[in-house]
Image (cartoon, rainbow, N blue to C red; front, top):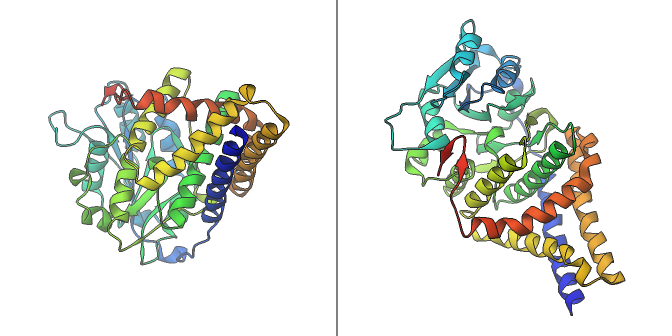
Length: 363
């Protein structure tokens, strides 16, 4: 009986895995680099003195026509040395600009407010966002912007993480797994997720949905905006698999910060459309049944477990290879253990208590 249930779940899991792979590998045409649009990069930073110089250095190395690019750094009421580091870095860089959020502005809160501040100052036709703990490739901005054909309103890309040990490696693989699911659904026209540290959109489309001021508050502001633009039903939203647009962020340092990150994503995920819950349902069931293996130990059961693990590997391997980060796959089994546990446990953490603590603020 339970083997039959497991088989049904594995078939559903296989079906959505195939959809992810097909969608993620969809290719898109580009405009020429000679026709790149004016662009504004926005980085919202709060208490990032340990990390932001890494981000600033990578942004200063971008291969983009200087007259077409500006970088806006939003100091979101940092209480450490973030603001001074920004000031010192940009003093001889005319295309870099610092903006500071106001304490008494209560219409928006959190990262949505910081981004809205930056966008109001932006002159570019295309807005690109990354985070203050990220490193972008020199080719990042020009690659992302080259996908902006006339009918495209939003382009998002892949992010990995520094994988110097098993703790960072399992997080890096998890980023790619989740973003492959996001890319697969975006590219078949049914988006469920994206990531704000490698995201871009037309400023005109942002204005058309009323900006962040008109959107409901969310701790996952990136998907909230993407969904609003998607609901206009006028433009294409794409998620190309392009290693030249890859962003690398820093992994959470410890279990506490990782727990808070996953809870924030879980709470934000409650706002996804129904199709998102269907995908979560199959993932939850598949991982739960793997964890129950000691209770239903048979040879057939083990075959189903092995098949599920194999599906995860064959989803991750080609994506990592195309992104040029296949070395991270040495942490595959660390990721599998981590993935099994948090996918099963997270609903029981999120549903009873939706309080989120992030960057020293509680939402």
